[in-house]
Length: 489
Image 1 (cartoon, helix red, strand yellow):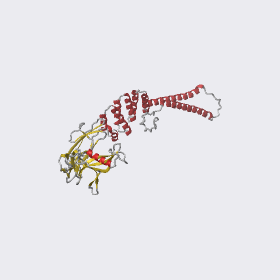
Image 2: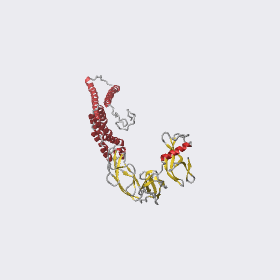
Image 3: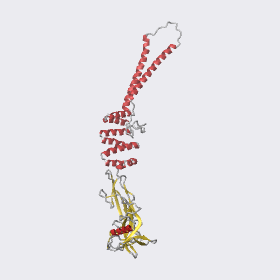
Image 4: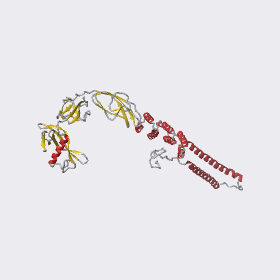
């Protein structure tokens, strides 16, 4: 059967369209059919009786009689009357019985037909007389106890009346019926949660779902639930660093502690996996969903047994320096050394130490750490330096000297760095101070092409400016990787 409103195919026996919500008139008008049936039956029976009487007369007229020598005698009126009266009485009796049966059928239909009760309920609901409508539905429920569609209608009428709790009560009674189809059960839960959501009764939604034995229903509405957080590793002893992930069933926030104390909204918020290194951990976590529902506390413990590598050893101490100096590290036997220059804690994503580092100009804060193959970090070693040169050649002066030298050689069209064949201009930026054997110390500058929107693209050319004289040079490397200079003066 299809819905006359939207054309959607309806499940057999359903009294409303699940797509558009329109209630379907399934009960035909009964009284006219009964009336027509009675009239047709009476007419047919009258014709049958009349036909039987005519047939009897014809048979009597054609019956062969024995010759009678006596004079025939006509029947008297009194002799014909009993036969006629008997036929009339039979007809009246039959009609009376038929009419009585019809009225009994109508009475029984009105009293014991589920379809009639639903039809009347719809009629009164259309008139917004929900008390009368619910009365008929109550009668229908007594006639058909397992009719989920009747209960859903009744709940909807209570809702329309503003009796939300009664609407919930009949639905709670319904979901206890194990014979419900999944679609009916889903509709009942959805109707309950719609009411609870309007009244912000989220704790009751969570409790109802926790009691639900149907996993499909739980999954369907799990956004209302706050299940106990789950851990990506089971409790136990480990010989490696654990990247521990804590997950929840839906959106919200996870709060955790590392010492086993009960977490609350003042505890650490879980935003990324926890890296558990050597030591003992007792993780406790609680989940609070977007509706403010709080889960039970989940707990797990871990013992990480790892050998910490030796820290790197530095040959320089923190302090002030006035000549170019290299920062050298003595590497430990096992592990890789990583470092940072901004004071942040180094990790595997930091710079890898591969050889002596030129101390940068100005203040710097180096941190070094050894990380083993298992991912275990050593103690962090820190050094702070303040490197200043006793020279009149500043970094700005070094850049100006290179720019002017290129302009004098007609490489640049002006001192702003514009040149033929490029879009934008050339800019020069300090990289570090390098020591060229037998030649001294130089500022090393990188060359970039800067576009009109400010983006930069690095070229392959390098420049070196002597730190004490300011002499500009091209910096080159030979085939053996040795540095050399080409003067720009």
